[in-house]
Image (cartoon, rainbow, N blue to C red):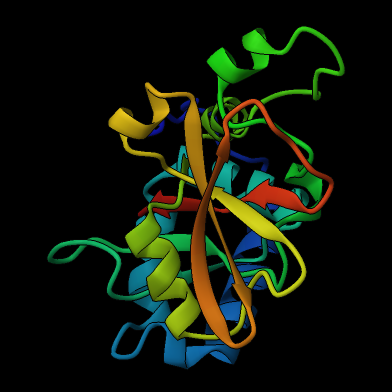
Length: 190
C-alpha cells in the first residue's frame, strides 16, 4: 500500500529550515544509515517537493523523521519516525476507517491509516518496525499501530508493537480500540 503525496511543496523558507533540521538529525545518528551521504539524500528530497511536505507534517506531529538504511530493496531510501515514543501528535486513534465507522460511541478523532494517508505516508510494517528497534529503544512507554495483514484485519483485528522488558513485542487488538499511549509511526520512501 503506497501513500499518495499531494504534489504540493513547502515555501522556500520552510523547506530550508526543514532540510537543516533533517540534516542535523541525519548527521547526529549516522549508525541509522551507514554509507549514505547527506548530499545524496538532499538531492532526492529537493527533487520531491511533496515528500518534503510529508516530512514537514511528520516533524510537526512529533515524529522526528530520520533516514533508516535496510528497510527497502536496492537503492530505496526511507525516512522513518524516530521519536523515542510514538509521535504525540498521532495518538488516540483507532486502526482504520472501517474500525472508526464500527464504533457506536466514544469515537476517537480519527484512524491511524487515515491520518497516515493524509500525511502522505504509510504505517510501518512489522519488519520495518523490528528494523527500527535494532537501532535503538523505541516505544518503551507507548505503542504503535503497524500495517496489518489483510487476513487479520478481515477478522476485526489489527497489530501494534512496543518494547517492554528489553524485548520487542507485536500484539493484536480490536481495530476499533484506541488508547492515549498508542499512536503510529510512518515510513516515507525518498
